[in-house]
Image (cartoon, rainbow, N blue to C red):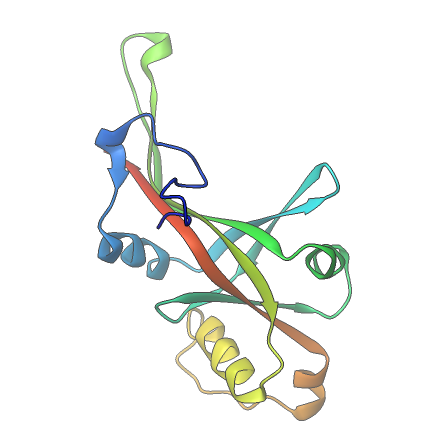
Length: 163
């Protein structure tokens, strides 16, 4: 994805031989794990936090308590960056400076949107819980009312892999 000027907001990838351009491959990485890191901005200071998430094919969802640093930051500035990485390891070399990181990584940016619709909220929570259990759960109204669900509307996404 690119912005309206045709330029990618992340810039051009230096190692184009490692770039993942196939959206199906990017989506497969997103679906293959349950933890992503989100980066927010507090003035000129970055704030990074890991969260469990769900993916519906076009947007990412995570949940949170209704108060706290990440909630405060998203309310002030809903720009968000996310990172999902799998297949970590080291590719060793005989030369000290030639070691490489083995990985498949997706990085994207978007807007954090607080979900108000209860049906969408429950669907997102079901997606998050599905990473950990096959059981279906009911969410008591009191729990739903005190849980924030945040949707990331993806504006740009990139993939990269090595080995």
